[in-house]
Structure formats: structure tokens, C-alpha cells
Length: 410
Image (cartoon, rainbow, N blue to C red):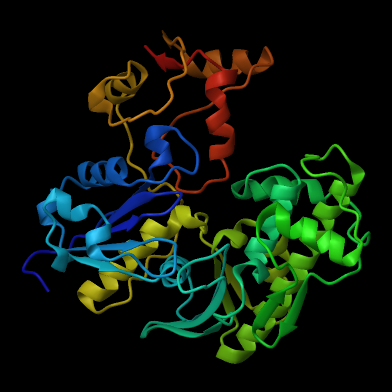
């Protein structure tokens, strides 16, 4: 414990990279993609600088930096790149990927005790599904998928595989979820998952689209041609099939994990928790008395989970910061907004691709925006701090090509 109030930082080294910083009065976090405008971007350097500037602290003032990533093992201090910035390796600690998700879910929840369920495409040590008992005394892992089971058998990897088959990147699973509402969930009867207590075993033997192709050959199922992107009803039915099977697997898993912990409040995290259709069914189960999922439940929330873990390790106390909003970014003055629009290096943006645009000032920005909407144009309204959640980012990322005239008040 230091003489001053603790300052801790969390960093995600994988895709959806970013950084977070926590003090006794501040909690700031940002995804790297918000600063370089490349979706799902890895990296953390610009995000770390952003957090330090927002909290008005220097890197040497940080007591502990916790990092996480994907792969067989959590990253070692020498693999982070932080030592090149002069950070003492003794101030760098790694945390398990799924445990970081668990900290984000529990510490931001309103519950003093809860079952924490983490489900994603993959973390460290072959993890795809894990569950924890969380109380004010700590977060204890109670179980998860067998480490010998291939990643292809996980819930998240299965959903990713069908998303690839349908023609999208695995990070675009939300498109599969949306497409599923147009399909027939009963078009295929073969179970995709087998539940064994609090363990799920998927029937895919390979990841990505190759796994769906192999399943179709093995079972005789017709999922339509690859890359149909909703243009073939068989692909639409395949989306409904994987969505329904995922909902059933998650429901069984939640019920069994709650029975194992004896804690009926459910905190859900990991990329699969972004499947809001499945999540809504989870929260309605009789076994669930309370439900919470952080808005940034995917790897965009990893850095924040790392920082929360660092706070616990630094102070010995589980940080309890029930979520009031998702605006973890800082606010901006008109001058700073103008710096960003003119691409002034002082803005902190590190764009990889630059889309040309024009901008002007307006005396009545609300009236100008309303007129643009009335004219059938698409606008983006910038106000307050950045959200950490990925959902609205999908819309924001497309705006530079749709509305090329940002406006500012005079």
C-alpha cells in the first residue's frame, strides 16, 4: 500500500484492445478503436495515454498495471511492451482472461453476492465457459469447460463458426442474431450442444466456417451455400438454428451453475453476453432472481476488468462500483473537438485510415441537426463522454461515409 491514494491501470493486449484507469474518485476507460477508428483494433498505447491525460496523472504515478490477453497463458511482463516505456516489471501483473471478465461483471453489478458466468470464444488455458461464486470476500472460480475439450466445442466458437459460414467476420455475430429472427428455428433438429451438469460440449469439431461444413457433411443438414449473408432461406434457417441452440445451452448452463453456487443473482460476461436475445431469456428463468451484464461485456471490457482486479490486489478490497452509466470516456471542450476535426496531433487521435470530410459551425446546432434528419440524412450526435459499449459503435463507425458534414455550435 502506497502513501498516496492508489492509481491502477488495466490493459487488454488482445483484439478490442484498450486501457482503463481507476483511482479512489475516478474510473476512466477507452477502446483503442475509438482513437484509431479501426473496428476491433488491438493495441493500447493511445488508450493508455488517453486515460492518463483524463485522470491527470503520469505513468510513473501508477502503482500497478494489470494486463490480460488471449492465448494459452496470460501474458508475461516482458511481453507487454510496457517495459519499453520504463515501467518496472514488478509493477506489471497478468490476470486470467476469464477472471478479468468476471471482475467487470461482478464489480459493476448491484449485487453483494452473485453467480458469475463467463462465456466467450476463448480465453486462456482453453477456457470458453467458466463460472464463479462472487461475494465481497472475493471471486472464486468453481468450474468450467474441460481443458481437453477443443475450443470448437464451445458456445462462442460455435456461434462464430456459423457467423463465418453466413459470410461475416466472427466479431459480427450480432448480424447472425438479427438474421435468426427471420428463420425457422425448427428447420434442424440435431442438437448442437450436449449438457453435462455445468459443462457444455458442442458438436463442432473445427472452428470457423470449416466446422459448419463438416457438421453439414456429417449430419446431412443443408445450411445453404457459404457467404449467403441472408440471401438464401437455408442460411436464414441456419442462423435461427444456432441462435435457438445457443439459448438452450446457455439456459441449461445458467441453471446448473446457479445450483452449484447457491447464489441466484446472475452476472453474465464474455462476448456471448452481447447476444441480447439469449440474455433476455436468461434473466427470465425461474432460477435467476437478479440479472446483470456489463454493457462492455465483450473484450472491450477486458481493460476495465483488469483495472478492477488491480484495485483488489492493491488494496485488498473488492471494488464495488455499481454501474450508473456506460460513459467511461472523458468530456471535451469545443476547442478539443475542433482539434479532432482538423486532425491536430494534440487531439490524441491516431487514425489508420482517413476519410475526407467537411465541417462548419452552426448558430443553432439542434435546428441544423433536425433539418438534416428531415432531409433524410443520417447524423451522429456527439455529446459527453465516450461509451465503452460496442453496440452503438457499429452505427458510429459508418457515419463518416454517410454524413460528411460535422457541425459545431458557433
